[in-house]
Image (cartoon, rainbow, N blue to C red; front, side, top):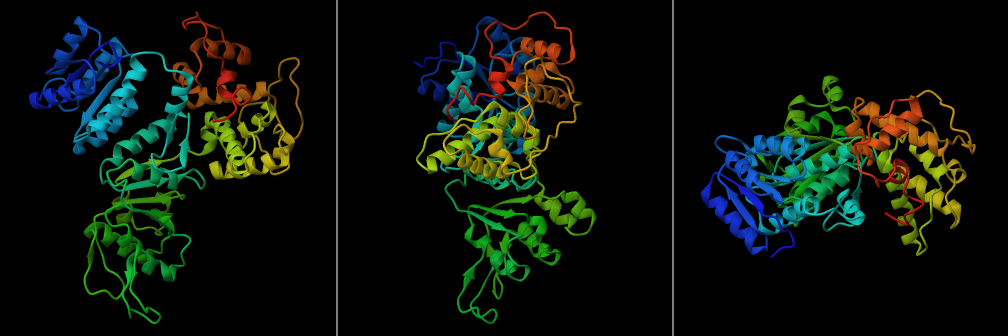
Amino acid sequence: MNACAKPILVVDDDPAMRVALTESLKSLGYMTQMASSGEDALARLNEKPVAAILTDMQMSGMSGIDLFHTVSKRNPKIPVIIMSAHGTIDTAVSAMKLGVLDYLVKPFSQERLLEVIKKSSSVGASPATSADSEKRSSFSMRSNPRVILTKDLGMLKLLKMAEVVASSDATIFIEGESGTGKELLARFVHEHSPRAHRPFIAINCAAVPENLLESELFGYEKGAFTGAITRKPGKFELANTGTILLDEVSEMHISLQAKLLRVLQEKEVDSVGGREPIPLDIRVIATTNRPILKEVEAGRFREDLYYRLNVFPLHIPPLRDRMADIPMLAEYFVKKVADRNNSTSQEISHDALSLLMLRGWRGNVREMENIMERATLLAQGGVILPEHLEATVTMVATSPAQPVSPPQGATNHGFGAITLWEAERNLILGTLEKLNENRTHAAKSLGISIRTLRNKLKEYRGDIAGDDEEEAGVTTAIGKIFPVAQQGGV
């Protein structure tokens, strides 16, 4: 039997589905218990503890979401997994926002079931190791070397929503500033979709000249125009059965947007000079770095096309709103340079990290990668210091907080840098402000305990510390926010 000593509670009002899930879990080595409704599940929880709950979304009487709410109030440590049909994906996404551990979109494979149950076991059965925790805090492509690294709660929720919608064929519209990783997110969706082993074709609508974009997208037939000496399939045709990414679609000329709208509506494409339309079975993902509604209001982007593309919107936050990610990303890019040059990864000084934490990052993750590569080369194998960063860019502090005198002994090292104490203070206060002074959520986002947060606030602004509610032995904020000196890589 599986190492998980407690049973998994399977809740479904469909007897056949309930038995099938139970037998499947038993074949994987798990103990199980069945419940025919949410009310029945709550009664069984009173009788015997469980390792996790696997519940259907739509049931007569208490729904899966209602069951989750009740269970989370009674025992928030019990992982809850929701099962949903394709028609309830939006509800599943809302459930993920509320704190449901994971989802299963029907129909699902036994491999997918095992993957989710293993995750619930690591959460509910025993404390995770630091390595497991780090693994869960970053999402990676299953078959692609490019990764999306994040510890930010907002980004983690975004990736979970992307994983939810990946199982459907819904058109996705990704908005975000340049350099935030919109194409990476599009590939993430593709790699987690049923089309993962089909083509993924990307075209940058801003990089192709206007007079060539139509033939690039839709293709052309031999003899369609002067110079068309052979037939050329377009990107839509090449991506058939897979996924097409229309990168920076807002740059497309208004006249071509009408043709694109027809392709999306009819699911067929007319090549230039072609006699018959070519049917398509395709997933469409579009991205933009512009405020798209303003483009619609200005008449530069068709409103009907916007609504056709914006079936499921995803917005990637800028790096300046993901401050907890900055140390991890800085380490990752330094290690990437070291691996490319077959050398040892360099450390980043705390003062250098202070500069990185306070930068505006107008170019986001792409800008950080360039800066860290140049700084790594300038450091010549030594510790990366503030001067190695200042030699490449002018660092600009973005925190709106008023200047505060650091504690005695804290020093400013010049180059526009701030002290580690100030960087930590700005991060904690900024996170609190972002979360409307909700200390519980702020502590979770920062990876620290409530007690540590209270002590820090007492130090920074004289808040009165409350009773010690958390157990001893938790890591401090500084170790979580600036782990570079203790850890050699990502």
